[in-house]
Image 1 (cartoon, one colour):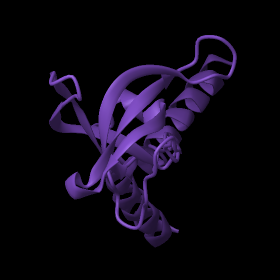
Image 2: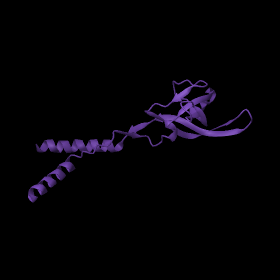
Image 3: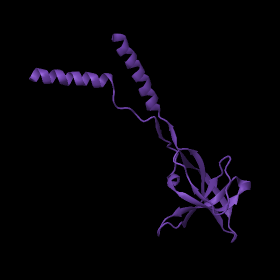
Image 4: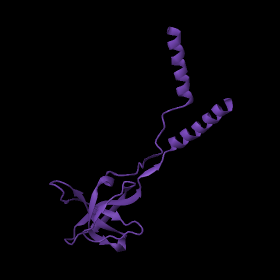
Amino acid sequence: MKKIMLFLGSLLSACSSTFNLSVPPEKIRNPDCSYFSDERFEILQTLSYRGGALANVCEYKYGMSCWHGMVVFLEKPDNVTFYDEQMININSDKCLMIDGVYEYTTTEKVLKTVPKLKLIEGYLANPEYAEWQEKYRNEKEKHNEGA
């Protein structure tokens, strides 16, 4: 009985090393994505001459109302039009990267500095997946040659 258990254990060990069942994800979250990516925004003022808009980060405090939180500068992506009081949601395949700061002067002549956010790809190709795929192909070819 001990010999059978030892044989089965070594067989399973050999199979698991030959065919790695742990498949890494094909895509990974972009490390440049900021915590702003999960937020919703309301456009305060469009600044087309600056290529973007000032927006409030929505903070949900009481029900579904959008309370005004931190002010940010949203860089305008190609083929997108911003307008005052527009609500902006970020698609799950995209995210926002902090790309420096934007400075402006309020009507009260106060200098403000806010984060400048840029829309980027939310997911990137996982290099570990490409390595795994190559290793799997090689192992599969070796296995087919031996059959």
